[in-house]
Image (cartoon, rainbow, N blue to C red; front, top):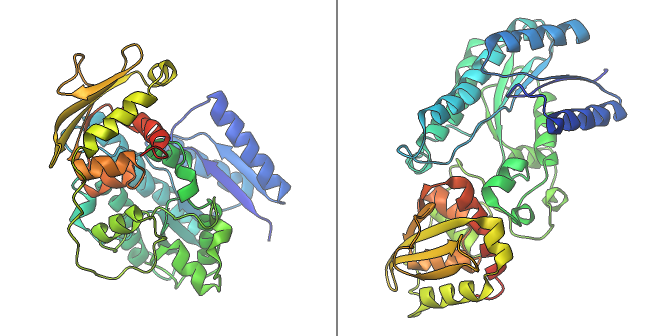
Length: 386
């Protein structure tokens, strides 16, 4: 059967970057023997969606499979999330998925192999995943609720399922969230592609499922998952929204163990840091500062630390040469981070990833999230010295 593909972009754009990416992907598909129709579409616009679907039907004669992967993300709490950002996430993630599915369903119902696949998490509704980024979680769960409803509504006509990774996948979004070096803890996008293919091979009766990539590939007989790792043998960062207890995920990630099938275990009290650990950490940070780091960062960070050696500390990466110290910075902080002294030392020594700490509630951030992400690059430089 000839392979054809229509590509929809979540936001209408004609930037050189988008055009280059589209051309590269088009060439890869054609080199593999397929055909593709790139479409620049804002999935918030129902008419643009409809036009793109009509173009695909006109070019290829119908639609067999729809993959809803468009997504907007902002890992900010309720008071720190602007209304326009809330609207963006709801309109792209939930509404965009709903409208694109609605536009494709009349054509999917004519197909003998009809599938809708949403890249969205299982509906476990764990409050842990709401408390630090309520709007984003609602928007992603909205995509999953489309699976729940449409699978039942179109049972026997269209298979409707959700797919979610067990570990972090190396994408541009992960680079943005995790910072420099995060790729070594990720798997390649090919694991998602292979899992999706496994789903699409199945009949329409396979519907209403919330599938984890690794699990379905194990069913296919795959045992060696190092083939999907960016850095084989390196510990992997577990993805979120899964049923595993968050505290266990954090503990495994901090110990740098590869995440196995997790079992319930009693949380152990964290070990006390040695006296002066925070002060020693800032001393090493100060010794490592340079004009290049200041020029590349241009931000002032304030740390509100609880526990031994706690209090208010600052890291000034705006002033010439940079500076650190106890107390509030002389210039207004761009980012305020609140956490325990134990977690602060772990973060700067590489034992706790900032993204993991934030998602689990161990780290609270106020201010510019983009500048907060920049700080991880400095943390990576500190790891060998702490």
